[in-house]
Image (cartoon, rainbow, N blue to C red; front, side, top):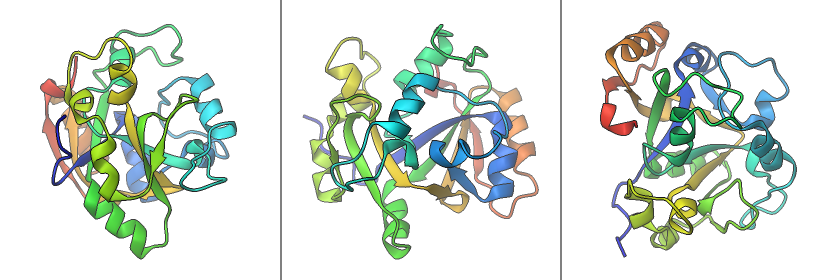
Length: 215
């Protein structure tokens, strides 16, 4: 079993047209908060799973906290969700493919340090937090319980690898933009669009074109 990385990174995917709103708001917001306001930019993801995460699925490590009240991150780029976007899965309302999708990257340890300083709840799951059977933890000493082989593999068909690859980090309510270290884009055109979207922001993460993070 692969050990936990010393400095894990976490990855959130959004449509590039949402970056301007994130820069203006100063935060990435949870689905629960976004449901109360008109969306700014293109929404990706499966609506039925978003609803389940907001109304049915709670965390054992923080009783009463719904998954949908948290901002979710994966522990890897090239996620299973991105593959569904790439394949234009018919269950997705969004059918625009992977080209305009960007990865927002943060450092796990820095985020947890910020969360503790700001009394913000956080957790990580050992598998897909949209399922009914995930386990969650809120102790970094338990990161080794994540199946890091599954997280890092590009060959993830079938269970349990597919579910374990979708392990998530969850931060209650919203995620401050200043913790985003890097933006990864599929191609130069999307990278330029990302750079333009954050050009006037006080915090401007590095934008890199990283096709290896895509399908």
